[in-house]
Amino acid sequence: MKTTIVLDDEIAARLRREAARRGASMSSLVEDALRRFFGERPPARKLSPLPVFDGGRPLVDVSDREALFRAMEEDS
Image 1 (cartoon, helix red, strand yellow):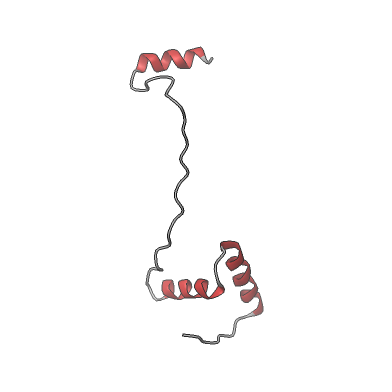
Image 2 (tube, one colour):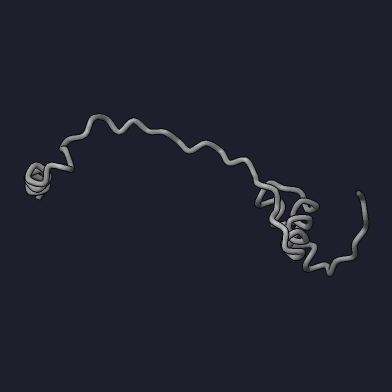
């Protein structure tokens, strides 16, 4: 539903900046704020997948305490 609201100039400017920072619309931020005000949770947002890195093969078996201590002493 479309509606018109009157906002203080400073609040509108802050809303505009925050919407730009998040890459969202001003309407979606106002809607999220109103949902929180009324005790609702905003709809879940789809998260970007986490990056995956190949760290190579392990240099030491961390479950082998002695091997771990030896490896740490070598770097000192």
